[in-house]
Structures are given as C-alpha cells and as structure tokens.
Length: 154
Image 1 (spheres, one colour):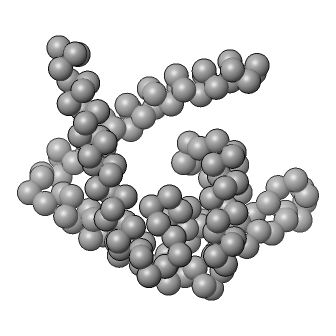
Image 2: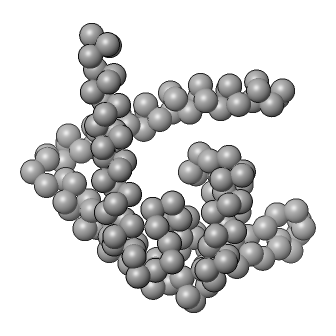
C-alpha cells in the first residue's frame, strides 16, 4: 500500500509546489519579490514588529534561511530592523512604505489562488486536507529538527 501511495503523493506535492511558485512569481512580477519572500512580507504586514525568532518558528526555517530572506528584503527596501528597547539582542522587523503595495498585492494573489485552487471542492474536504497537511508537516518537522539537533550536538 505505502509503495504506491508515497510516490503518487510526492509527485502531486511536487507539482503543487511548482505550480504555486509559478502562480505567485507571475502574480508578484511587478514587485521585487517572489514566492520565497512573500510569506515574510505578508506576515510582517499583519504582525508589525515581529522578531526573527518568531518568524523562524512560524515558517519552520533555520536561521540561515531567515537571515538570507531578511537580507534580500532589506536590499530591495521592503524591511527595516529596529532594536528592542529592553533587550539589545532582540531585533524587531517592520515593513517600509515601499513594501505596502507588495503586501496588498500578496493578499490579492492569495485570494485569487485560493479561489482557483478550491473550485468545485467542498469546504469540508478543504478543511480536512489542510488539517492532514499540517499533521504531515508536523510529523516530518519533528524528525527533521530532531536530526538537525543531533547533528549539531544539541
């Protein structure tokens, strides 16, 4: 049973991922960001002042990936970093005025994508799919991060 399901599921996840990237890259082409950065811009739009630690946990990325993304967003003028008044080690991230149109466009692309994605699929099936994908990600996440901690001697 597993021998058949995994290759098919993996193939569909890969196709879905590739199509999403294409959809978002095309939808955001007038801005200086694409698929990889849009999550962070949207998050800071709705959570101004978030810390990098908060974002790393939210998106389940390592510090290197987050640092690279923040650097890219800084280079295009979409993000500013402010130190915490109480703890100098903590940095808060904010969108700049230049980033606001991109953040608003991201919301539009999300709505369009979801409308296309969910066409003719009952709400209950969509909810079940989301819960299932979250559980799958949690399962893999535990295994991956556990191995990373072992590798780094934690």
